[in-house]
Image (tube, rainbow, N blue to C red; front, side, top):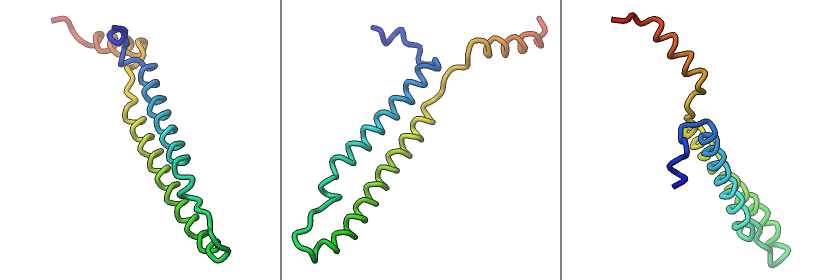
Length: 106
C-alpha cells in the first residue's frame, strides 16, 4: 500500500533510481571481479610454464576489465536515461503564470 503514496515524478525518486542502478552495477562489477579470481590468476605447475602464464594472465585481466567497463557504461546510460524528475513547483508556477498572463479572456 505504501507504493501508492510514492510520487514517482519527484526529484528524490529519480535520484533514488540513479542510485539504485549505480549500486546494482557496483555489485555486478565486484561479483565479476571476485568470481573470476582463479580464472584470471592460474598457477603454474613448472618454471617454464610461469613465463607463458604471464601473457595469459594479462590477456584475461584485460578481458575482465573490458567487461567491467561495459557494465559501468551500460549502468551510466541506464542511470542517465532513467533520470526524469518533475521540475520544482516554483519553476512550474512561474512558467504557468507567464502563459496565463499572455492569454486573453474570451
